[in-house]
Image 1 (cartoon, helix red, strand yellow):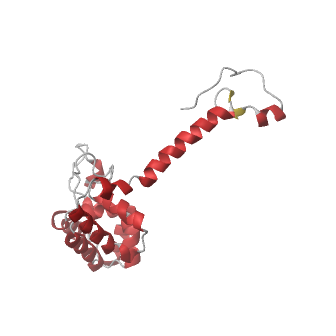
Image 2 (cartoon, helix red, strand yellow):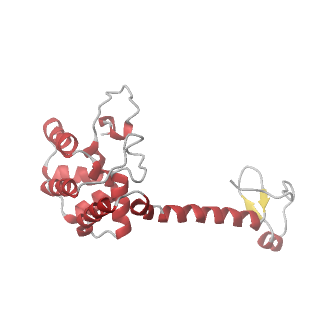
Image 3 (cartoon, helix red, strand yellow):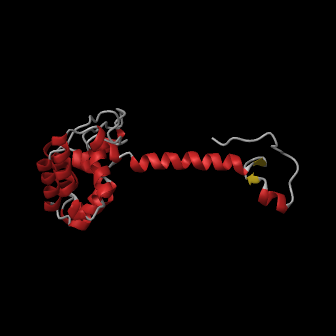
Length: 206
């Protein structure tokens, strides 16, 4: 929200020197001026917000996980190291996949949990078996990190089977689809046009 001072004017325009030093014109339906002080306060608020987002993942281990869980978390991060992500990116991807960081994909259904490195490795191995290279997996994980938190048997394998049997999508075509729309791996509902308010995981998006 931008705050405006009492010198707001609507009809007269200052000369170019005054405009450069005192007022800034906002191009909306009517000319409005506000002081650089107001703009400065807005920038400070924006910076603080971004700063919180940047460091929010630091709290995952320090404020939530036990010592034993931290070791498990680190093992899962290590499993992602082959794809060239920075440590902070690994942290964020796991956080989104397992409810430690809010993700709109899950809505309110995802509970916080600590991933099991065995399950993470099984998902990564399965995706490789579909013909995805490490570079492909890096792109897929960057676009859809929540795949690590999906159920391997009931979602990933079931959905790949549906794509193959009902649409004949397999091989290179399947690879291209997963790179373009990896969220299809997590679809677990088909509203058939009668919305059930779970659009992020519905086949209607396919």
